[in-house]
Image 1 (spheres, rainbow, N blue to C red):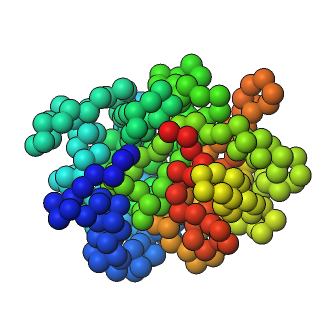
Image 2 (cartoon, rainbow, N blue to C red; image 1 turned 30 degrees about the horizontal axis):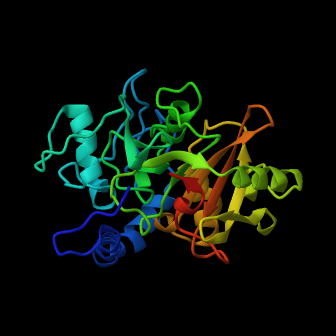
Length: 304
């Protein structure tokens, strides 16, 4: 999304970063560290002390659970006025924001909505949770019952999907807390350059792509990929499908392993292609500021 101004004239990107540093910083350093490391019990096993996640599965065909009230300091309150969250409320509940702006609701589902990204094009869309979730730092995303927003984004963005990305190669991505411009979790559905797809295929053929999540952070599976502004280093994993919780995989195999923070991570998903078609697998790229020439934004690889 493009930057928008704040009442004090500060660009939204700077305002969000400053607000995070002054307000949520202590929470993310303390509560988020322990909350994001917590492993919630399997469905039906009952509550576990120190684990605020709901443990019952969502009703069949219904919406997934949303973050409980005690997580609002980290995940946002439904009363927040973030513009993207207001767009979600307009799509799901018909609530018109005070500004009078009405979102272009391309698809409204029980767990998410699909909106245009900015700049508006036929290869720039957003999948946005119907729950109030500020972003990647929200520990509720590690809950095994949370909706699989990545799978939903792909099912919509793929050729033949409800909101297809019209580009030769497709990518999905989410920004870190400091790099995003709006504070409601959103997965970008966009294009990727031919060179990005070919580079990932070449790394895969050379054995430079992890094939098990436990390998994701290993040095041999870190590699530069060229995007806007030159090469940046990414940790690269290949998965056979988007059926697992990518946020939980990242937290377990990278963030906790190296003592990092979820708030500082970016994730990019690139479907693996053959010369003629999608082969069913996905490259999962992660980066952050701890890597040499690492990046905290997915925007370097996606084409809007």
